[in-house]
Each structure stands twice: as structure tokens, then as C-alpha cells.
Amino acid sequence: MLKKEIVIKNNKDLNSFYKKLKFYKYLFFVKFETNNNEIQDIISALNIKNRNKRINYIYDYACKYIDNYWNGKNYCGFKNNKCYCQQYKGCKYTNGCCRLCIYQSNKGCKTSNLTCKFYYCTEVHKRYKVLNYDDIKILKIFSFRQKTIIRHSYFNSREGILFDLKYSLISIFAIKLIIRNIIRIIILNKRKRKKLNKK
Ligand code: SF4
Ligand code: SF4
Image (cartoon, rainbow, N blue to C red; front, side, top):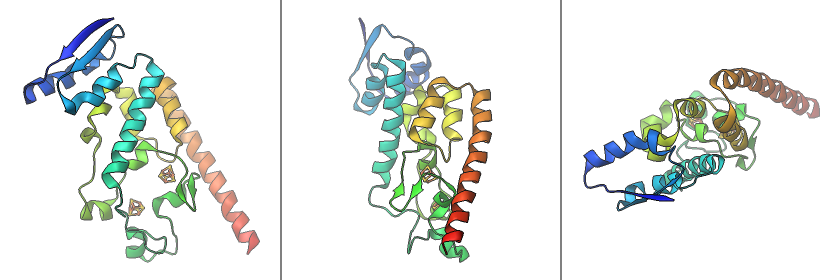
């Protein structure tokens, strides 16, 4: 395998590296090395030559990055199972925006959804500096199609999002999104009826 060392001496080099990622990600016969710690994780991703394993790595890396950023912080302000919004509006509902999702459980989210990890409503924005897509540099490896999927995959499982990132065209993704939301609403309504019947 050929070797390529990425030498970063200043911001100009760094920006140039990010721009070249579109090209580097297709160099399946090149092993990358670098002198720069900041891009070490991107280099590790580029050195995974199996496409599906690389997508898994980037996805899990981004989820972990966001989880570490918020580690120990109750950024949605949950108190008695009600988030800032629900306290502020005096809602009778609990569990924040996750109450609308089939992956919500008593112990929290049952999956690892990168899209949801980027969602913060105005109540959170008012109180914290939140992370944006561009803050996680490793995501620059993803294509426009994959970035679009990540921006619109609320209420889906990790495995579902990874499948779309690997195989779904935007048009198929859009159709799946509509179908998934219809199924989600049907399931939630069924659960609601079941709960009411038990009372
Ligand atoms: S993002 Fe906003 S609405 Fe959603 S759980 Fe957090 S505070 Fe509540
Ligand atoms: S997938 Fe998203 S909306 Fe659903 S429970 Fe997890 S974080 Fe909440």
C-alpha cells in the first residue's frame, strides 16, 4: 500500500486538508499518516478501507464526541421527567421531545441517534453553547447525500440511520421518512389507547 503523510503546519494547511477530504476518501490504496493530533481521528477513518466499517466508525465517533461534550450536564433541564420546555409551558406531558418517539423508554433513549444528538430547542440554546454539525470535523468525510440523511433522521434507530447512510438514495430516503413517520404515529397511538384501556 502507498503511504501519504499529511503535514499540518498552520490553519491554511488544515483547511486545505479538509477540502481534499472529498478526494482522499476514495484513495483505498493509500495509508495516511499525520504529524497533527487534531486530525488523527479523521486519518484513522480514512485508513479504514472497508466503506461500511468506515461509515460505522464515523457515526459512532460523532455520537461519542457529542456525548462526551455533554457528559454530566442536564442540558434539557429535566426535573420530575419534565424538560425546560414542558416546565415553562406547564405541559402535562413528560419526557421532552422523546415522548413522540418509539425508542423512548423509562431509562432514556434505547438507541444512539446522531440527528437527535444535534437537536436543541430554543430553551437549550438560551442556556448553553451547543454543538453544530460543522463542529465535528470527522463528518466532513460524508457526502452531501449522507449529510442530508443525518440532518433529517429524527426518531430513527442507529441501525436504521446507518443503513440509510450506506445504501439509500435521497429519493428513497425521503419516501422512507414519510412511511416511518406514519408507522411511528400509528404505534404511538396504539400505545396511548392501551394505556387508557388499562386505567
Ligand atoms: S430539546 Fe427542548 S423540547 Fe426537547 S427535551 Fe430538550 S428542552 Fe425539551
Ligand atoms: S431516537 Fe431521538 S427522539 Fe427517539 S428516544 Fe432517542 S433521542 Fe429521543
